[in-house]
Amino acid sequence: MKKTLLVFAVLITALLALQSFRSAPQDDGELSPFVGTWDWEYNPELTHRFSIWIGERNDSLLFTMGGVFYSGSRIHMPDYGDDNNFLQLMRIKKTEGTLVKGKMCAAMSNAYFNIKRAKTYNDFSFELLNDTTMLFIHSDTLSFWPDTAVMRRRDYVNNIFSNECHYYMRLDK
Image 1 (cartoon, rainbow, N blue to C red):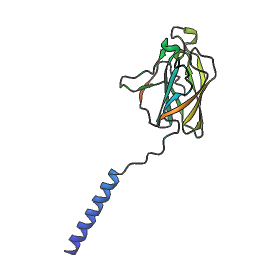
Image 2: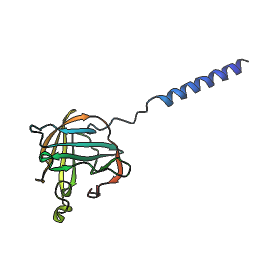
Image 3: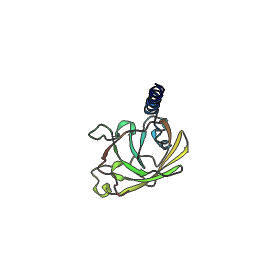
Image 4: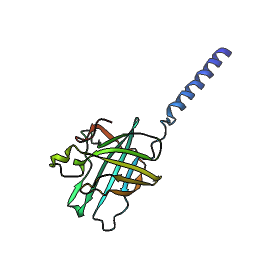
């Protein structure tokens, strides 16, 4: 009788332990401080505005951008895949620190019909100044993106990206 009671108590304890483990939140590690949605801070006349959406998957940060420029005469919003998630515009390997660098196709910020620029890739960098402020910098004078912008964090959500990549995404990284 004592053995049966002991086995029963051990089984109940094991079941409770398994249940609590299963329902406990799993620690997948911290998200990169770059993750989230970032909005351009400077916008005195509301003629330009743009945002950057950043997600994290495995060892990479995934980026897309979109905005309204020149009072709406130039609109560039992010593209979506067949699964209705953001298309990857840039993929940058996660690194330690507050600075990440990548390349984006000039065709994303210029006229798509400009064949000479279609395969030109410009350097971009994203530097965290603190947990709510990021600096967006690119090395070329593109048609409508600002060359430097102070971005403010809208949220700290791991944006979901499609497995599909944008047609102009640089795939050698």
